[in-house]
Length: 350
Image (cartoon, rainbow, N blue to C red; front, side, top):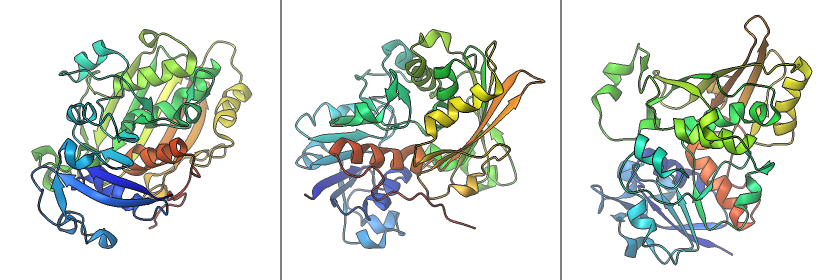
């Protein structure tokens, strides 16, 4: 069976990456691409690297145009998906790459986003532990999927094994992330200009204000069965001059009585059989260059007994494993297709 697909926000970074991956998917046909201000223009005017899709023209983003497809991807700014998902009730599968359907708490949405709150959908990070099983079990047969925030899923994958196994203390997590500006989208912003970024590292959303914080707390609470209020995290992202990538360095105190072997075994047990999330050998740590273009999350783990903390360093491509790759991996699972279809394990180098 070939599934018909519509992709909204197709002129942006997330929408373009969804299209790049879907273009090589043997089970889908990309029929419709939509945009707002760029509607009426050829897709390749905005995504010139997508040569196999040069025949497509960007249409208006409306419920009528998006409906009638087997799969609809929404790659819209936060707060804009809900107006369309409410009107797509008959669509067999809808995947939202925005934040509108990620959070279970209306209070958290109001505090970090504001505007209309929409119900949470099945979270699109298959490798996360949720209620004692991997999230992929909840994705099987799902009809509504919320693709993750790239920073949020990176930190959650980094720490969920230790939280679930009880070998780290989740009440004192510190995460500092080096991130590429493509995660902020394609809209023109002064702080994202090359002249502002090149040769500089720029922190933003400092002091507990970043919108991905409640998403991380929600994911780690689900992994451990704990109250999200018991998950406390100091989260600081830093823009660095690379177009793609996240390098997340997260630390947490070692739980009383946890041995080095138990700590490493928590991550090995969680990810030893996974294709796209891999724990590196002891003493090895990833680079963002190792995951460019790939749907992989590479994890390095260190046990710092002098500070009594575990340090986890995780690298992902924010546009692939952080967004579009996670969405398509989740789509494959929901439809009963091979999970890795159209997703690369290998990065691009140099």
